[in-house]
Image (cartoon, rainbow, N blue to C red; front, side, top):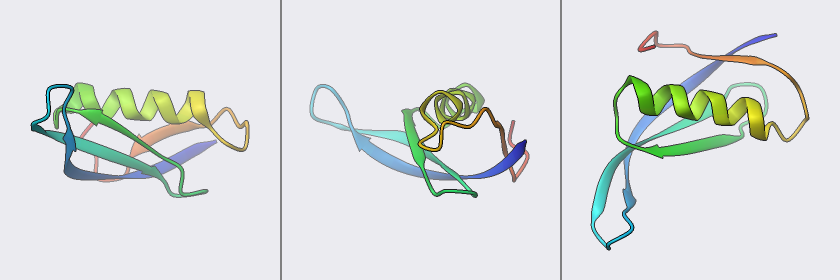
Length: 70
């Protein structure tokens, strides 16, 4: 099933204590979210892949950015 996701830019605590620009991607079906450092397409794609791997409902969905960034 194709599932749209929302992408939100934020900052996360980096490994060395500083704030790092990041993204949080949330599944529109269940609300599960993943996060990655960086705000580019590669970071968003990483989050979408993690959603598939970590689905709490054990579904094999195809996640995509509903805003079309990638």
